[in-house]
Image (cartoon, rainbow, N blue to C red; front, side):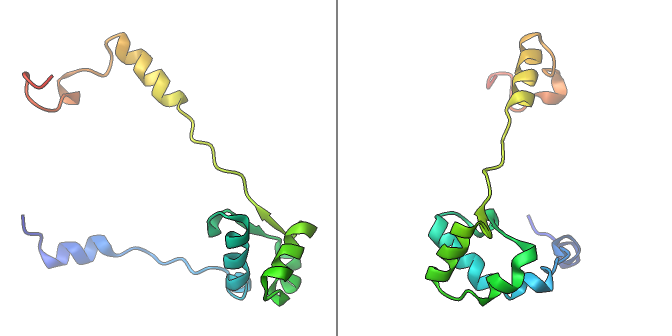
Length: 110
């Protein structure tokens, strides 16, 4: 299956969102905090009001102090609810969502 080059160029164009300038200086702090708190960089929250103080911290010791003071926080894990799945399965037990358009594979495979 060969895809023409123009198709790939059109599909692969994804807009790049630049992070805000004030957080670019705090890249190191975010990485260190993530390592200290044993989580990813996305779960680290840096207080935007205290960006000057946070950007001055350049060691693990200083980052630990900021965590203790509450300027750097580890965000909670986002919820991944199964309520929609349960609702859909309940409907399937009643015979919904099982028409010809929903079937994949042959008759023998089902």
